[in-house]
Image (cartoon, rainbow, N blue to C red):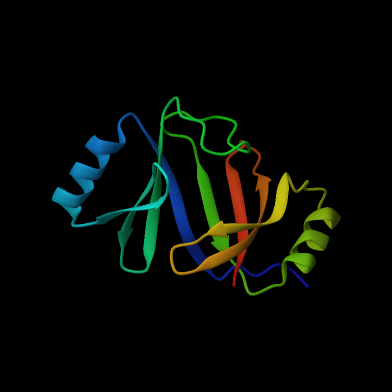
Length: 128
């Protein structure tokens, strides 16, 4: 049975300055900034969020290319992660981390991480 993705949970945006980015998104787009871990900020809107990652700051060991414009996406699925992992293995895609706990936009996540062909970090997660 193929993997079925349900929705996008969050996007990580690498920026030159977190304070300048927060100021712009709050002022111009009405988003609300929240600190979700010490010195880690996200911009919230609706039921979505954009996590902010400042260039030159290592926030996670699985982030290989921390520069402005790099991709890091999280997709939610109801498919149990064990089935997702089996599907990925069948497709020859390596899991680079997980399952691990993570912070989602709506609630805690149980996540695995893979790379796409361009080495964008892709998180596939179950809400818990």
